[in-house]
Length: 148
Image (cartoon, rainbow, N blue to C red; front, side, top):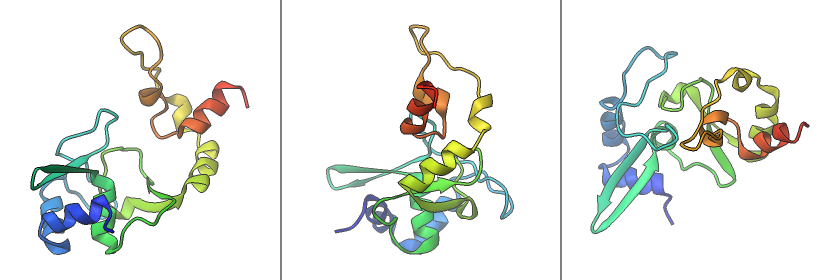
């Protein structure tokens, strides 16, 4: 069974056509620059890709689709696409890698960039954890909140 990303690539006309389409949807730049997604974004700020398959709408995250296009294989089960840069909407394959979820949590705990993020409040004046923690996984956020 194909993953969402593979189905999206098939609906775009294959890997080469998907790569051409993706190239028109980011701000461009050099190999080491962030390629900021110009298409739609999810509420949490990640690039979104969607296509119609008959009556069904298939949606996926642009960084995952970009990783699959660049590597020619699906994202392995039990892993997530990880960005080495600071931008959630970056789709530069040079900035994308897959990591085990546990490995991501360990790396997340070692990183300090999130400590400097401004506190973002929701509509009732409470911190909005999805925005506040940005790249942190929920487990890391809960550990920090508990004081560990």
